[in-house]
Amino acid sequence: MKKKVLALIVAAGMLMAIFGGCSGGSGSGDQNDDVGSNYPNKPIQIIVPVPAGGDTDYNARVLAEYVSKYIGQPVVVTNVEGGGTVTGMQQILDGNPDGYSLVVNGTDVFVPNMLGNTEVTLDSFKTAGISLIDNTTVLAVHKDSGFTQLPELVEASKANPQGLEYGMKIGATNNICGIAMGTQWGAEFKNVDVGNNAAKMTALLAKQTDVININYSLAKDYFTTGEFVPLVLLGSEKNQALPELPLAEDFGMENLDYSKFFWLGMHPETPDEIVKIFSDALKKACEDPEYIEKMEANYLTVKFMEPQEAHQFALNFYEETMLPFKEDFVNQ
Image (cartoon, rainbow, N blue to C red; front, side, top):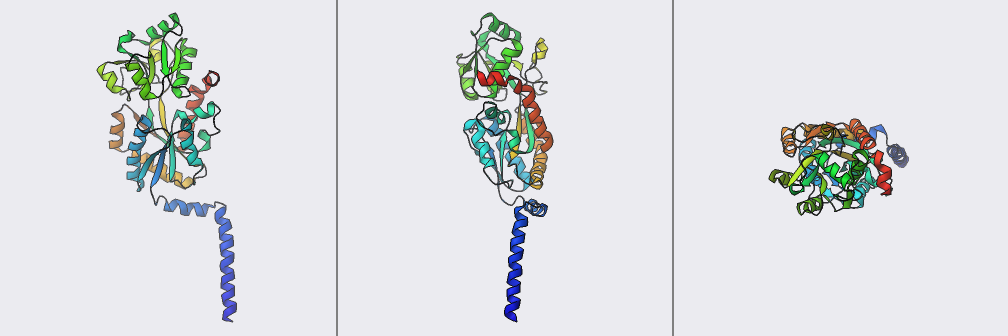
């Protein structure tokens, strides 16, 4: 009799394991609720898909400090460079959909796909939110150039086509900016690949290039000393922290918006409960006065957007400021 009872208990246990396993494999709501209730119980990683030392890297590290404060676990930053940010993004897609790894990006999330180098783009991810807008991109010249206003520079380029060099990086967003200046302003710059932001500043300082697209916060020391002259803010609206910077429309020209946004994405199968927990911590970080003060010291605007709003904002930015120049960008 005892053997029969034991056999029934074992059989029942086997059936529960079989059916329980099937239920868990389907990604049921109950399982996701359990996952969400335990999240996070270990450190969270933010992948920065570019080298250390730049503005994206710095902004990610500051943000990680404050998200950690509100999510209750350490948030660490890892640089995974390569492929024009594709390598870092792909690492998220190849990982687990558990919310413990995110990638931070901006307009560069679209560029490799525009060039046909990957199928990965914004829609490959589940957006966790946007925390920051960097409306500090300027067109800058050396103080010895003699240019003090945007129209002077553009007219000089028209008078001497290909005679003035626009230093940029092929395959980057500032490359698209060079194309847009030609299309929208009629500028006749010679677009030359001089490298990343650090290389662009070095080239302009040495007067080896004539004009660059650069974030004011990155080159603020040169602007402070007067070595660099900012001619125009490449945005769609004024930056209240830099009220003296004119927009293109102030000269009767069309605004070109090459500001940046700080977007965070997760694996597309990450449960919504986990995305919400992280997004809520992100929102609290964006409301922290210390975080706001640190960002505003670099003229940046803290602006939290919840996942759906952030996703749509990024798509709209792409469609309005990047997509119109895709053909010229790809075929240059």
